[in-house]
View 1: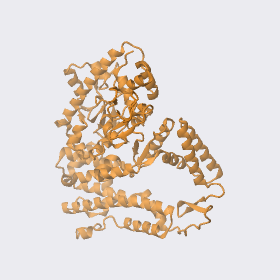
View 2: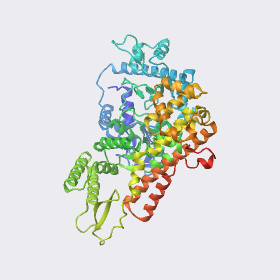
View 3: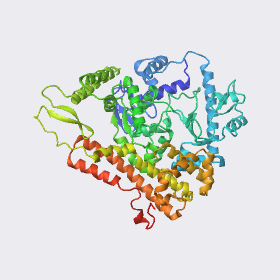
View 4: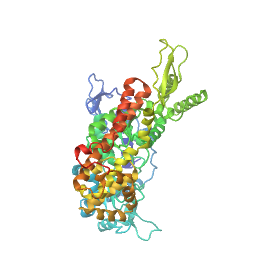
Length: 640
């Protein structure tokens, strides 16, 4: 039986040659390859090599060589069909039906690849044209270099709902591509209920999606118009593309992942690209879906313990917990996941752009093992302060253990998680025990006795207004918001500053979504219509339905508090105020991060050192936001 080439490629992509060979041959890693004694000859020095990156093995003593299918044929006396069936079962792939039309389908798929390559080239050309100016401005704001844009083949899909919607369609038609092929490739919208077919992607930054061989099989498009309903739009399922079975950047990341011994899965295309520009080339991303079983299999094909990287906010933690649930039934000896959680409010692209690749590597180096994430997921789901609640947690832990299919892995998780339960609630007599107490607004584990005798808990710290206020700094957020409003108000009233400070303005962290959108639109307008004055900027904001946000800023507290943000301030006053607020805002964000760490330290150990550190951070945060302007610019203080 002949198999479609695409099926065999997919099969080999899911199976590591070294894993199959390692069942017969004791392999030792040597550089990028594995070596071992030949299974075909009686040798004393190893001459048998395996290269996972090339999906190939070679025996120098016998001259035999081949792929993973050939190895099973040679060592287990299997037919080609039997070897394929065996590997397909391991990889979780369905065997293709015995259909003589498979060969014809392969030819059709090959022609669709040609169509996709034509579309990719069209998008690349449009990015460099006049029509691609807005897309290029966006990439510049995101800090991407020209070489990076070229390496990832980024492009621009022209057109809009209100304008020309068939530019790609016309281009492909002129090259002899049938409308039916364009529809099958997912490049156009068509159907019996649609009078005239039109381009699927319009006014979007385009990310080509490749298969394991580097062939373009789909696209992801990032909206450049804030009014677009979908920020990101991916190709639909096609004969070439199944979004739950692939990974963005797979073909580029395979060798760097092999060299590094691990692969990093991030959430978005820009995260992958930003990390690559920062020197971290072993990153991939799912294709618009939560991580699937097939994608976990692909990651394991690249490394036994991939790192999943998530944003450090609540949404990121929820996504991490979903990945925990998905992987538990799939665990097998030697294969797991690790979890890297970013600083809150940052994604990998932000972190690399603002602090460099080393900051991102530090986050990856601190990745947490799966067992720790399983525990955190369950313990953070409730309060376990009564016998009934503790029993519920124990029952839940047993359910989690039962989800692990592999008996050996399940046994080790049972030992680990039951040990954590025992340590949390207090072991049986003769060992150390603890109780949970509320101290100064924090939960603290107090050692009450056991092996080694009784130890008195450190002197409790009284609950003070300052301690209560520590939570308010983060929860209220008024301080940070006021500075963000001031920055925007300065740019609204003095858009001429964008000529010198557009990059600085684009990189500052603005947390409220509405203010962030306003900032991005101001930058976009400046990129397209510079030089700008105050009235011209207002008119453009009206056309983009953002005038209300701007008016609220002008009528808010920020407009009344600081002279340098007002329309009648001089350019020098506005410039001095802007630079000071940017620096102050960055400092506040850093201090808030330090405050979280100080609160955690105090919750664990309420000693004088930790308490002093917390108060010192509060003192710095309590300084007026415009403190220092009098020193930097005499006569330009806020107020009257």
